[in-house]
Length: 266
Length: 295
Image 1 (cartoon, each protein chain N blue to C red):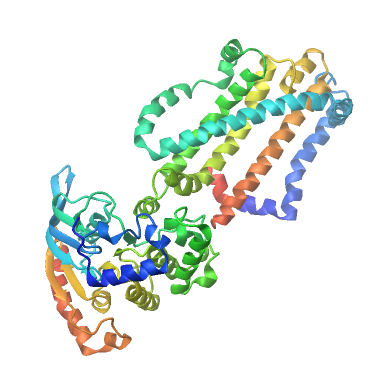
Image 2 (tube, each protein chain N blue to C red):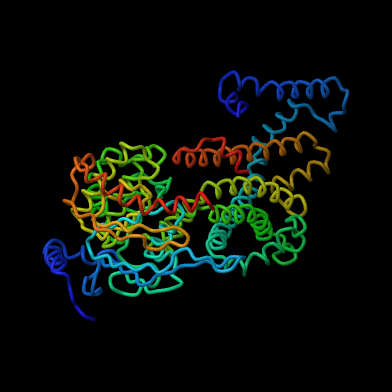
């Protein structure tokens, strides 16, 4: 609670920068002084140089585009499947009975383990990567949507019944909006997971993309490029998370809930 | 079907058909009165309800018989946990009796009956909707948007909350929330209105104001009201008839018509006859309290 409040203030913001700055400085010193070979650990300045170089030559964009395409498409698919199936499972015990056992059987399979299988089925192109991202990101969205619906207070459910709100109207007017905070929390977890999965899939088998370039740079000893692409992943994750947090913040504020509830939902 | 309308209902029907033809086609809420022979009438015939537990069948309600005519205001009075709320849930179709016949609008009740409104003990407001959006919820998608908004605003005005139309539930006080609930339940002009200790959580002054609002709304629309409460004075002040339930299982201890001017006037609260009525009804409640203490 106190930690969250203090990061909001200006002093808190400055404080939160101290450790990263010290680490960067230490890193640069290690690299420049020659303590660690620049092949193993190029300094932050070298990494930034590599990043700018990739940006001006257009290699960064050429690799970021396919990654983002796979990432966003897979992530969108996971929402398209995860939210409706989660809503159905949340509302109907019968649907839960049919679906949950099968889903719980699939859930422990790590997405990474399915990469070879999907490449075999869907080929080395984008389809297999999109599918694997969708698979990996599906679980938190499905689970959170289902729990969100199951947690709707009995009073609100009964009240909807008495008002004659059932069937499709119940889904759109009660279940979906009531579960929204929980769904958004699930989406945010999935967004992070989808990024991990897309990079991993590209590292295993691809001809383009950030993951592919990381492996490529590692094999050709371009360590600065390798780290530059890792920084790109971090920035993408940070931006996506920021947008989703903003959406969550708006939903929470609209219901008179504090932001600290966002943390507890995870 | 026997078309046997109450004379008052016929008059109302005529007025409505002249007013707005569409209003009669509002789905479940304002249906053709011909569909029901006795719209608004609720009758209990030897109603019993028991629950299965590990210790066997536990009766909650037993042998309740009462006939509530359309447009009357009846209170169900009883100690906490005696089964009053269960009785309302039966009428609302949220639960089913294990014995007897329950008729709503003169028909044996199956499922959620038409034209029944329910106000719960806690305000059942949807936190992502504004006051107005909460009020119009039952008719949303069933009538044109402009008309929906007008009707919603009209209801909010009736409960004195027009200025708060855009506030969300967390920005409203407990009394205001229950007013929004009243506005929502009156939006559909239900023929039967069930209230489950709606003012139980409010302070004394807010409660009196809410009682006055409820009576005002009732005078205009004349639904059959079943008002559940554990407060004797509230029952005497609000209702034409009070049914006192005993405890374990709930049975009718007394069924009394409060034979005083109706609707009441604020001065009634302070006159001797009011306290006499309260004393009289309280005597039926007292034995159950004693039993509770011994148990």
